[in-house]
Length: 405
Image (cartoon, rainbow, N blue to C red; front, side, top):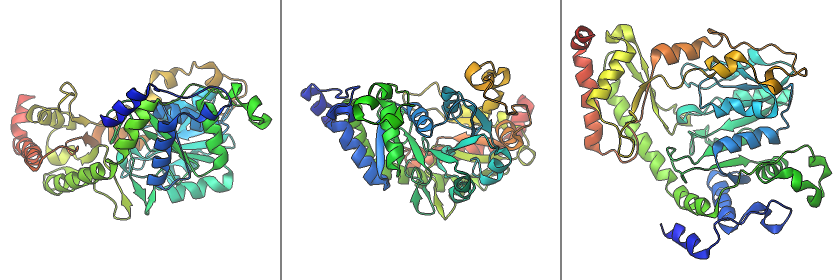
């Protein structure tokens, strides 16, 4: 509140100029926030944007992705992670997920590689890091850029290293339901000065800037308005101070819930790999319908009746069957009517969006996966005990559920 008041009293709510000028990079609050973010995560460059979606679009553009290219993406994520290549006329190619991490992996990426592959967008889904060393070993020798979608994983570590620092670029979210937020917003990170420059140009009307900047070699860039305000940046600087504590609270709550839920038939809660750090945007649970005695959907509906939603989100349950429908099954991919990507004469490849093309993600989504948010910060020990009692009550009354069906 004090940070917001300071900005309001300054009268300077945004300081960007869409021209080559000292204010091209934004005002003092934006720059302070970017410096804090880079220092916190140990990354050379951090660039604030008005959403993680914008950040993904800027990252893909910075990598030089264009018409006729292919970009390997995850089928199990928010839609923008896969649609970002289409903005530049490229074709998304879906790799299946690993059944334990729910991320794409080197093993699932390798069969999708073609001479047209320009980049890979790796999503650290649910807050757990993908196997980045193996993915980078696959991409580096081929000159393929790797973008990390860290929207759900701020503070996650892979072998002691921060996500967002492992590939060529990282993208974080400051959307209102993330670990920390500014209402809407995002951050793009990179250790590559040239990529940072390209992102900064795309963020702020590139085509109007490069001439005065004296960089004719950047004349291929199209710019947008992806700028974060001074107000949001000031909030972000304060929120960043809270991130470590909020993450540790999530981990502590998950450890407690997982230790108790693991004793119930047919439930296998995900826990952190000891060599990495999972920050649990949601808590995934593997569900075995045969061991439980009811379908996953029946089990989840029974849990919803036992456990309430949260303040300000009363209409949104904190538990669900699966996560999002595999993206390639959306009408956009099934119909393939987008001219610049799917119907361009420059694209001569073949892409498979049929049912069964990613069998693991389909099995997870339609049969095996439960996701919940009962570990969110603010949950007291009493609240967590209530969650356990709710699961136990449903588990102990399976016969009643089957008879009711």
